[in-house]
Image (cartoon, rainbow, N blue to C red; front, side, top):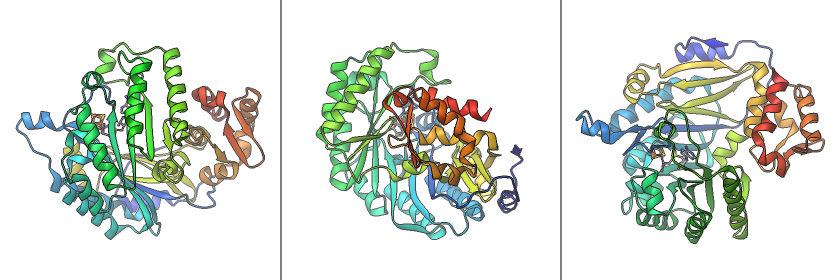
Length: 411
Ligand SMILES: C[S@@+](CC[C@H](N)C(=O)[O-])C[C@H]1O[C@@H](n2cnc3c(N)ncnc32)[C@H](O)[C@@H]1O
Ligand code: SF4
């Protein structure tokens, strides 16, 4: 059911109306903050990222740091009635390229958040950084501003591959950024991609060797996907075939396990104690308030689950946010869609989920997924007992088939 977005206080009243769902408790709440600019748009990227260089060339503007922070503050203030009285468990400052913002700007952003929302003690605060924006002492500045975890987008350590991916940095800059990340943060993540244009198994091995040399507490390794509406969708590069991609994934899983990085989600590997609490909340079908251009939110109320999307284009977003109208769309998730939405997230986790959590987070009885669970078990895609459901190795390899069973169930 689509609703016309209105003033946030009205939205809170609408969301609190009676309804057919019964959520026993509200899930943990996270905050996502989107900073939408990049130096250059990468040809594979479909995130809401806007090329700053193009705007510079057109002479329109430099990074409008202060104006954007003002808009974020107004956006957050307008959203407060939707999360009244709830503590924030984790914060993620993502992009785009958040590391384009100076440490002083990030300091102000975190102070603005802290002044308006209660953060749980020891709250994880992640910031995404691109090695192309790296300069000495910048990461230390983020740490001093209150960032607790840095996520560095490296993608590859091979200069030729970096060029083909349109990255603004080379391998040496990536290594320098990781040296600094390691020196400044107790916990940090390295983003890599595999099945890159023209990549061989040996080249992937070399990327892994280099990444593991930094002893990252967390590693994310994504299969390069060709997303619609990107440059790569228009001009597709030659990438390794599916068999090779599977072989690469096996190699990644073996080599990470050998150094104590456990695969806990489809693309995420961590040492004990270093899993990303923010992403775990997404995968557990927790709640998140997303502020910033194009940010998505998922918020629960006693009788409904609501999704919101903010205006995507930064200038439009900024003026709308200042007027307290940053939300472009809001949508109540239909009862029939909740099982699939839950499974889309929870089945990405190696350990699966507790059955009680399904009812707690969707407000639906377990009987709503009974048939699909039976079928998944019959096909060898899940293991389950009275308490937990866990994807098997086969279920993990054929994850979209497994998730689709819950789509059928909800149809
Ligand atoms: C929003 S980006 C964040 C970091 C920063 N913007 C950068 O690229 O360095 C998050 C990560 O998603 C991954 N990613 C982006 N587009 C992808 C695609 N088409 N296929 C696979 N992974 C992708 C990259 O590893 C990237 O680091
Ligand atoms: S730097 Fe990151 S967010 Fe920006 S265009 Fe490249 S992949 Fe997308």
